[in-house]
Image (tube, rainbow, N blue to C red):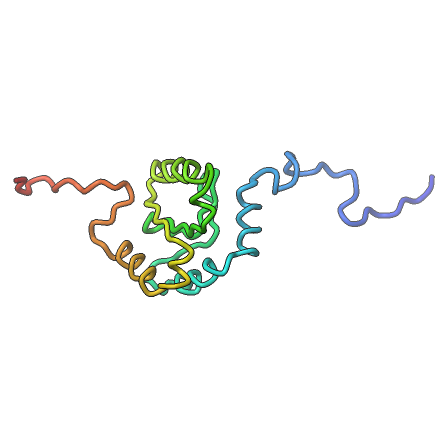
Length: 156
C-alpha cells in the first residue's frame, strides 16, 4: 500500500460545511453592500464624513442592507434612512422604484429622507441641519404616528 500525502489547502474527505453556494449567492444584498461601500460616489463620501463617528449624536451605517434593499446611510437607533439621489432618480422608472422602496422601508418602521446629490455638494450645512433636526426632533417616530397620551392624561 502506497503512502498518501496529507491533504492540502482544504482538500480531503471532510464533509463541506454550509452548502448553498458561495456566501455572495446566499445573501446577495451583503455582497452588493460591500461593493457599494468600495465604490461610493463623491456626495456619498462627503456626507459619510459628516455622519461617521457619531458626529450627529447617532450611529450611522453606510451602504447597509435592509430587506432586499441597500440603504445609502442607516441609523438603526433612530430608524432613519438617508438616501442620496442623483439625476437618474428623476428619469424613467426610477421614481416608481423609489416609491416602492420607500413604502417597503416605511412598513419596516423606517423614516426615509431623500437628499439630492446636488444639495450635498452645494449645501452640506443645510443637509446636516436637516438630518440633525430629524434626529433631535422629539416628535420623530419612525412609524410616522404621533404617540397617544399616556393613561390619565387629559385629552382635548
